[in-house]
Image (cartoon, rainbow, N blue to C red):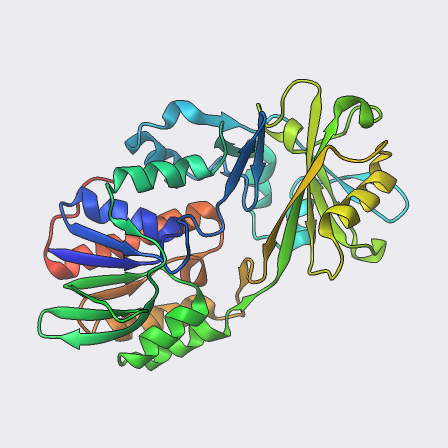
Length: 357
């Protein structure tokens, strides 16, 4: 049984893994040049630099359960530094647990974040992506964007940019909202157009490395967020080398700043503001910026009901489902759960055993 997963972000890879565990013949098509989506880890000279999310809520079981299946359980690490500060524009002040997420508009249960914190992988979140790609045994093909779906007698025909095509009995679309909206609406599920209204805000993450002696005094907590009235380009800063173990070599400090879109050099801009806030001395050893023109999606009220309506219409077609941050939640754990659930629904429609997980 051939199933095609469109999109090799974490949701798509999790869906493909679930399908492979059932014995399905899986192919993953990714339009970009690499798998992982917003998960990207740059490892350099003893530093572990995250370009996107650096961890997941410790109370969520989806990623740890998947890690155990991939034999990565011993690579999970717990958050070290806890708590956050708020930059008022004049000083850093303590912030209540969960307050940082609230200021940034991130939906994290306050009681869970305060009690359990976050977890990650010792060598970065890309560890999970790399293990999934390896476990799928050559099924992931990058630089192959899907331009259209056509119903066939046995399922679907997927047209790939450049002229090639693939046949499948079932399809999982684990792609951004604007892509899913076009593909789904075109095959007879007009409710899918609602995914095109999901808003993706631009953002930039900048990691900055310093010698430990360039940072005066101990840093408090895991980082800070900037209050709206503080002004400036830096919206938040995570003390990466304090938050998780082995993020920087001995004698070094790694910081990560979060900025909105900017026309200037984000590394220079982040350093200038962090130097003023934290009292940093001298220039950074290096900076590394990751640009996300379309970052995390934000939903408008009624999103869950719209997604349910889309899936109701898809159930009238050949086996086809949607997964990922555009549909079921932006957290990494939610993406893993979304992908695996989509795979299970597809397997149920195809009459195949659901496998493990």
